[in-house]
Image 1 (cartoon, rainbow, N blue to C red):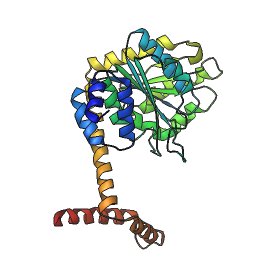
Image 2: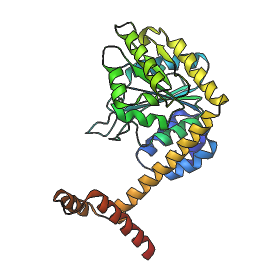
Image 3: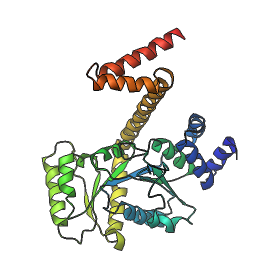
Image 4: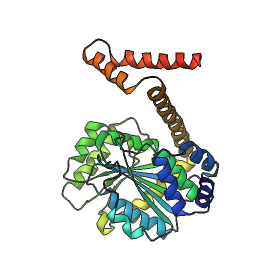
Length: 318
């Protein structure tokens, strides 16, 4: 199937074409051609980010939210970001066993992606995958992050609503306070709330919001037991309420404009870095420059600025 055919199939809602195009994006194959061809057909899918430490139940929550969305006849896309295998470069948890029961549903598209060492807990190709899923016709896109602590703050650059998931007895609330990541959560979710300590986390979250000046509106705290579906309908309604509130206050458009700005800057950074690595400095010279820093003959900032200046001079002489 050639590129034009794949794109036509994607616009028609073909999940196989979506999978093939995402693979191309991940492999850096015809990325610009794909994105520029499909972007005019992008729809405003609503993006829900689910983040939190490993083991808090993000995949189970994703599974239950898919059920709620499908009950409302919504088409759902899921991007599950997993740690990258150091050997294959693929997503270690790519099987996503908890989500397999949705595999036969043509209105649910699930894709596991390796973070490929990206520190923000998200794969570098996430923005372009979101575009592909929106053209596919997804009403909602769920992004489930790796779960790596403070660097999870990057999810706020992608999602319209961010769920920050905590569990009792794991020190999550203390870590949230230390890391300063509570600001990213639009909705706090206390999973496994039948465990001792859930009331303590809830009271701490509410107290932290009272002493914080960063948010004018108190963010809801929802207690659930995801495997038993306890609290899941309430969580789903809270997401819908947050979506409606943002639409009414024009906050949604502000967040989406910020997302576009972030995407442009991110693309610029990647393009400049790729240009410098390909045309300005060799791998061996980088090693030599590292030696200079290691031996205190130079510093990283001076070297970086000199490489940028060299790149500019090369462009002027071409």
